[in-house]
Length: 119
Image (tube, rainbow, N blue to C red; front, side, top):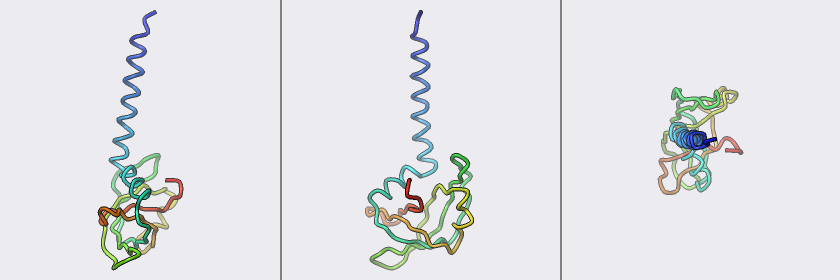
């Protein structure tokens, strides 16, 4: 029995899955957000405005945010980001809400929501 077609098919499926994972990270911003949260400066931000980006992941929306970021060592400033938000938490994450964020130390305009412990 010739197993070459089966191996080729499995290889192509694996490569497609790996490419899709990278695309999902770029589209949701979650890959970059994880990097910022891992090495970022802890701060808080007030939600100024939110919007639907049209993206979902596992039925959870990717939400766009205009934020007023309050760094621990300076004046508040405006920043824009997007984040994956549980659909159960949407009512709590509205304009006026104060959320934990992480600030990219290399570029303070880049912030990531830090609302979930496991992400």
